[in-house]
Image 1 (cartoon, rainbow, N blue to C red):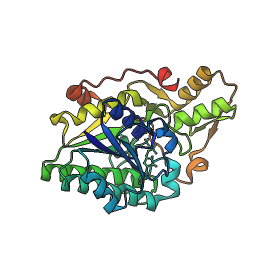
Image 2 (tube, rainbow, N blue to C red):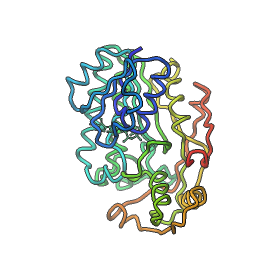
Image 3 (tube, rainbow, N blue to C red):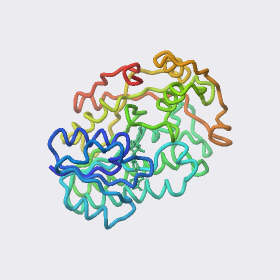
Image 4 (cartoon, helix red, strand yellow):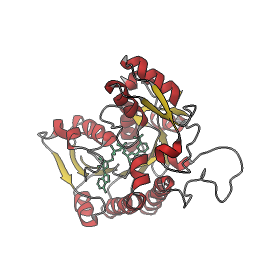
Length: 311
Ligand code: NAD
């Protein structure tokens, strides 16, 4: 099988490439190296059947040419990371909307099964109170740049779903919840690598907000095999499936855990959201995945606890 992996030089994409190569598949990576790195693929450089193409998913012709030669497409390229999105909302929106459109159209035109990476952000704040027009707990609040990411990913799901159901070409949509592991960088705001980098360098660990907000981190070593199994499971086609972990922790608790596991002397400091991300920024207090659908479809069961993930 020949697979195209967009975003293959990124964190999750490079782990996916490792699995595909280990399974004996040919792999073509399309990545513009905007947040990814060729370092993530250096160990695959001389593998027969592996090819890296530096390019943009907004380049429709390039995407179509690569997909036309493939048997399957994994679409992970996206503008990601809170800093990146907040600093470049328009470019992020363009990449995440039109880039996905290009990939999905190419896949459907060539009748190549495809996977599209979505996100827990599509659930918005997900509280239980009534929703108002100016309430950004639903994705798509037009006045908050962070939510351009959620809105674009929500539309990506729709594009993937509509094309998949009309054409009958197999399509898998994965909603990742805070995936972490080796090769993830803290540069764009991802909290676990940022804390670990701060702890290892002895700098203060910067908790945004009160630290009471709770998250659940999934290991890339669980998520990647899970998404590969979904691609082989017809019952998983044309639906969105959550993939993540099960151990919930507060961000303050995460900072404590990182200090303990790294043996760092770093102090933990608290920074207002306004200072960290700009005025008016809000965060959701809790984000916890129900992964029972993935379990029912492919037996998905997270195997790594938080300590193993941080290690
Ligand atoms: P990442 O930044 O490591 O990977 C994204 C890759 O896409 C990078 O290598 C980047 O260079 C590439 N890219 C960006 N714009 C591109 C463009 N225009 N053309 C070609 N390549 C481009 O991030 P990741 O965490 O590995 O995320 C992979 C996918 O999973 C993304 O679609 C992201 O939205 C989704 N996701 C990740 C998480 C997570 O916790 N890591 C959570 C939810 C969703």
